Amino acid sequence: MLPAAARINAKKRDKIPAPKLIERQRGAILEYWEILHKHQQQRFKKEIKVALLGNHAFDTWKGEGVTQLQNSCNYLIETRGFEAWDVR
Image 1: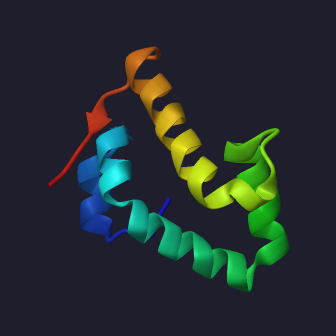
Image 2 (image 1 turned 60 degrees about the vertical axis):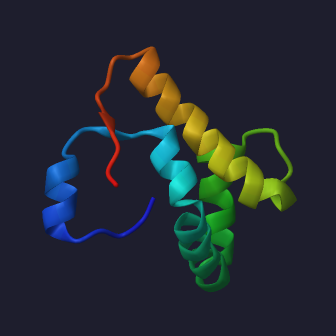
């Protein structure tokens, strides 16, 4: 989702970001995604379409992308039993 310092990534380990954490970091996520979109437009479009948008139109990537990211994380936590990661 976002680049992270090694020490922070080590704390996260195999935990899945909690949907609440994604919501709190929505602005940072979108800012980083905008940079990727600007500099790697074709690659970004392909990867977000496959990973998060599915049949949704690409022009909805900002809102739908974050929502689908939250849904995917929630599925992994609630259904698959992964541990949630939520930091303040």
